[in-house]
Length: 484
Image 1 (cartoon, rainbow, N blue to C red):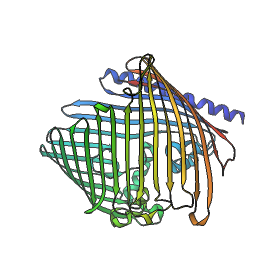
Image 2: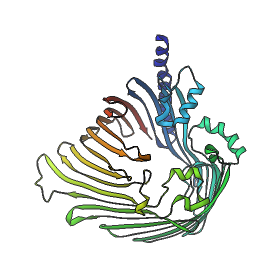
Image 3: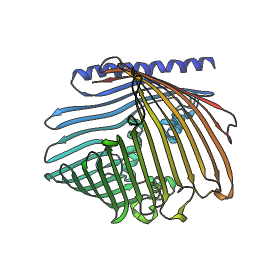
Image 4: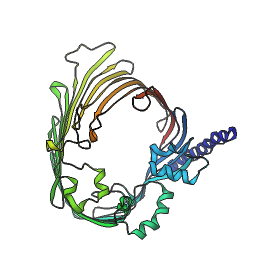
């Protein structure tokens, strides 16, 4: 037993060596005039009695190849050394943790993997644009995919495009390669065409787009359905109007298969005479997912809101210097407040999965001399899902910060109290959850391109129905970042 623990403690050394290699590679990349960033580090998660060691290195860079050609890369080396299969759950999900257990039954939860979040080669000119690779930001696509896309802009306000490839939901390079044969055999495919118009001036911008999407996927086999082909047409329109600093507005609307589906609105600005910043927003979903028929397969419908709803929010930030004397140590005082509400469009639709939620948050921010600042907040959430007693969440906390080049230090605390009663299936289930969190973070900018960060968080929580007494969680992390 003792020798097994020793082998585990030695494993982070190999991953740390890989982290050093990535740092050296970053130095070489800098010499080639790339732009990007490499973040490498170590994290310990201790959830009594389980301790999990993680080593990571994330790379993100762009390289201009000349004549409109560029290469973009975003990936990361991740590893975990733990005592059970839960080691990978927080990053990769239950299925991935199970795969690790199958691969290494003698040491469950230990894994090393390379995640490729995005990599593409792109060519862009005034007339033509082409992208090839793992595309996670293709305009209008329903999801990220491995494939290619092209656009044509014969006029300055017109763009026509087409794309196609295999959808992916896992960044792991190894598992992606292993899954390609089965995806090809199952006929999984995502392809579509786009058409867009845009009109711009100094204050007003208008745009409209059309997307035709066809997806052949075997994902429904996960819940017992046969493979299917999903086709839909999406129309999107947007308008923004910004006549002055005190008013900037935007309006967006979406139709799926020519059925009005979503709409959103936002207005924000700065009212100089009052030293007031404000933000107003609203979103509405007009149709239930089931009403969209073939536009959603049954698995994807679970991931979105199943019922029509409306949500709205308002927030203000007020500088109180004109009302509260400042000077000397106290340089400025501000008050931030926000309120939001989300509710079903039809009152009778209130349910466990479709609640009415009201949120309120407020707190002061203070700036002192010598690089010191502080803030505090109180937050209240009321969630009504039709139970006899709505769920309530009360939270408050604050942070003290010292920031003066090259040092940035933060320390804070937060307390959350959650109470709810569920009448699902007539159970009348009642429970409470309380958590107290303390944290400290420090960052040192060693040079203009190199920084080191350290973080430590301690949480004590009680879930009445499960633990009955406090359980402790500790997270410690050290990372180094190099920008080139």
